[in-house]
Length: 272
Image 1 (tube, rainbow, N blue to C red):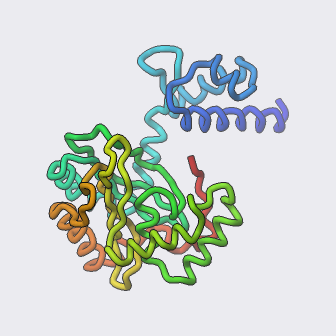
Image 2 (cartoon, rainbow, N blue to C red):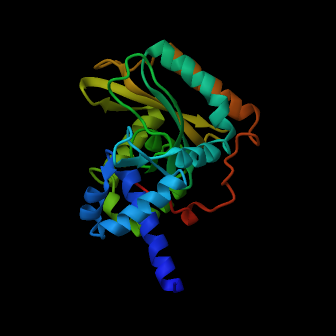
């Protein structure tokens, strides 16, 4: 078999893996073949290869496929490179129990955020976060919270990066609207966002900062922790934030990102 044919087959395997990983539900051979415009035989061989390697698994023993254990193990290995991942887990679990809402921790990776930890609360009907989710710094709630702590020159560099590499994902309302939102975060020390299915209620995110004031992460209460018109965060959320920030400031080298040596402009992460 020629090298070109081998490379083509390998390419299809990775394409099928990416397609299934990004799907909202488990998919079968026929659906994948139709949506990817690939022969069913090619899709089937790719699925069998990925299943044998542990990257995909059968959904409830049906002929439909979903992400298997191997990507989760790889994600876990990545998360464990951040000392904040393990250190934050008891804090997040305690907070989720106290407020009854889903909470999560996202770290900064260049011009992106990566969600590395989370805990579900008893009222978890509003927002179900996916660990390993990647977003640009202006997207979601954790990203802008982190972005608000960066210096002006860094924000300019960030705008250049987005314009050059993600022109289709500019901030909603434009950069001026984002700037106003960041100013709000600077003034309050946290950022809020409306919660789906809970009109008027807001989720909240706080930056985890180093001693120089720059955030390396953000802790987010994804459920409705602020009532309409209220500006005071739950005491348990403030305490959890204080614990995490104190850890980072007491041992800055320990909690430094393992990817700090890579320039932000050189980090290119896959977005959903």
